[in-house]
Image (spheres, rainbow, N blue to C red):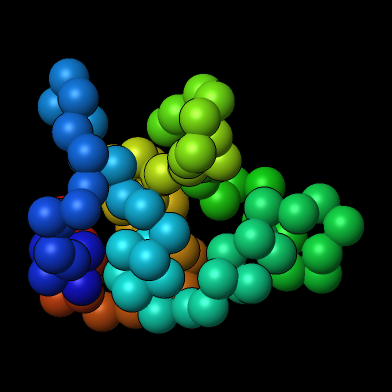
Length: 95
């Protein structure tokens, strides 16, 4: 799942890997609106534990560029798997 994501367009800095929205959509298997709903306290799908995006640029043409730290996404996904009681083989796949 996360290990299969193509990271050519991802950024790295100090060992952090940043997932752009298209990568996050692909690895979680949900739509963009679901991701933003999980971050919106007014949404019924809000999840306070969902990883928050970080700002990647300040000003210029791509001023709104954001990304998610891969390790935060993995940690969140592992917690969802643990809560659901899914088989341990899946847990190994997202390490």
